[in-house]
Length: 294
Length: 124
Ligand SMILES: [Zn+2]
Image (cartoon, rainbow over all chains, first blue to last red; front, side):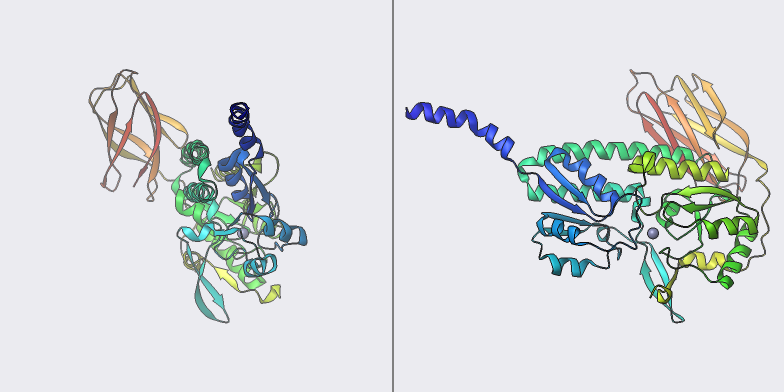
């Protein structure tokens, strides 16, 4: 009898372990990190993406539902580089025991000059996801964090991350090839807000932003007039709006400078439809930029 | 509150916002670029794409190929996409590219690969 019971236990144990294995609960505050966590975690994770594709992360404020999810999360992934100004409150209000990972703070920042009250101080550009190399770095960070939470899934997470990193490498090769269609002296990017610094550094563009780092930092009429002069002086052939911003000002600037309106870019994370994946976002942005500036 | 948000400007852009004497640039004129390609294993075929256009290709090139092309080459330099097709039996091979730009700067790049390889190389 004992032997039979032992046999039954041995037979059913792996099934119970597999079916009973709870998914790792991950909360993300960036649509980019939502994709990364899903790709690396696969069916071993349940990802709650708080900042939805097409929404503005600069304006995001957590709601009660977000707080409940964070309270239960085992891993909280933040875009960081000062994007989530609410992070201390989030920690305090939820009392979460989950590991809070400031993903973007683990790789280098583009430095900015912040003008405040006539004084200049150092700042950081939070839009790190416009560099595929940074997304690859984030993938490795997420992989390592998931392994810490579930060491027995190390093989799965490593394989998933490996496959995803290979796809990112292929995407980077596509971007380089597409950008190579554009002469270097035409790589001037006039956008609604200052979101493409990392992209510019990686692929040899100069950015002329209309607004500051956040879309709320809209320029006054004097600044706009200066920008129009600059755009005319450097000879920009197209200007771009963004999916989550009002295109009115950029269209006015296009009209004033004689540059054409090149279309809307996905600046603050994933969009909808074809732009709903990281690959789709890059293909949309790079295709739009290169085809308009050619 | 939003009105009080600090205006943030990228340092490099501060320079680009400064008034400049430069007027709208005409497209770069075609200039002579010299190439020396060296292969550890000669490929079946090699080709160069510049600004989305095939500008040169050769079947069964020698282990060293020297030639020049007239290309619109801005002062900022450019990127060339190389397509190299080694035979499936060829070992891991390398193509060395030595490019001399219109200002007589010599720039060297390498491309490693097996089988069919397509890669963009930056000059400089
Ligand atoms: Zn932004």
